[in-house]
Amino acid sequence: MSKAPVIAIDGPSGSGKGTIASRVAEALGFSLLDSGALYRVLGVACHQHNIDLADAAAVAKLARRLDIQFGLSGEGSVCLDGEDVSLVIRTDLGSDMASKVGAIEAAREALFARQLDFRKAPGLVADGRDMGTTVFPDATLKIFLTASAEERAQRRYKQLIGKGIDAILPALLRDLKERDRRDSERAVSPLKPAEDAIVIDTTDLTIDQVVKQVLEHYSSA
Ligand code: C5P
Image 1 (cartoon, rainbow, N blue to C red):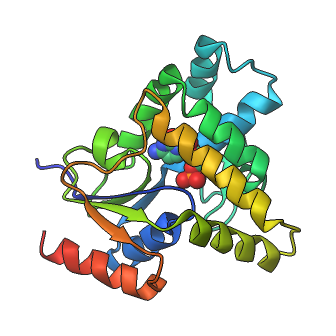
Image 2 (cartoon, rainbow, N blue to C red):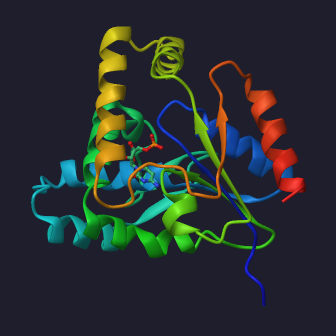
């Protein structure tokens, strides 16, 4: 039996991956894998269990035994060991811990099989950093979204302010650049477009325009 089709959507933080991936999945009736949420949950779990990130074996062990459930307490929700962690994984601590555990090879290996499990008929939209390069190298369509660092920091700023959370734009920009650096320079699965990926710069595009482009590429793939 042939494998279900996959649309891989990769890119840096704030490139619009999450929103675009969920809109594309909805339009096609496909399942969605937010792989960043797995790294975020693992990062938060390491923090809660006081795991030293220098101890790669301990991080990988935790990654293998984590009980992570998506959508259990509402759409887009994430539960860890039955507890709703949807909000805490989106905090700066969650982002920082995710990018630190993401640099640990054994942690990536431990999360690899979990990601493959999301591939089901009629299809999957997978968003992350290495969906097209490492996890689903045979994806039907590979999209790499980019946007300038300033635009991505602006988007994050508006998102936080909209939620009533205080934010300082220059600090957000600095943190975002630091995470970009860590994600692109790491030895394992660094953030980079797959050779056969279509790169879309979303700096001056609306969400609707990007969704339309991705769907058009998929129908001609
Ligand atoms: O996509 P999101 O911003 O939620 O990802 C949080 C962090 O998790 C990223 O900065 C990256 O370090 C890590 N990550 C990763 N590989 C993925 C998805 C996320 O290393 N496939």
